[in-house]
Length: 117
Image (spheres, rainbow, N blue to C red):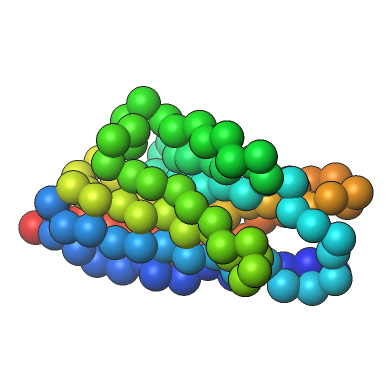
């Protein structure tokens, strides 16, 4: 059984920065890709950023230039560094991952990010 656990969410003011972490645990043979999605109230879940094992990144237009996704392979952890946060970034942020040979995606439980003055 594999598990993804997110951390780092919270309440911040517009313009602040925040870093989310997502650690994978359990028995697996590797991680092909990890990413971050978010879901705001009344909206569908949307891609924020993802990162393949080859190092290819994809960002939503709304966060490009403000958010950075990175990964520590030794820790099986993916990060989302968020800068210049806006109220419209408020959402539950979910981590996902594709574990090699195990299908997917697998999802974490989500972490709340609230940007408000």
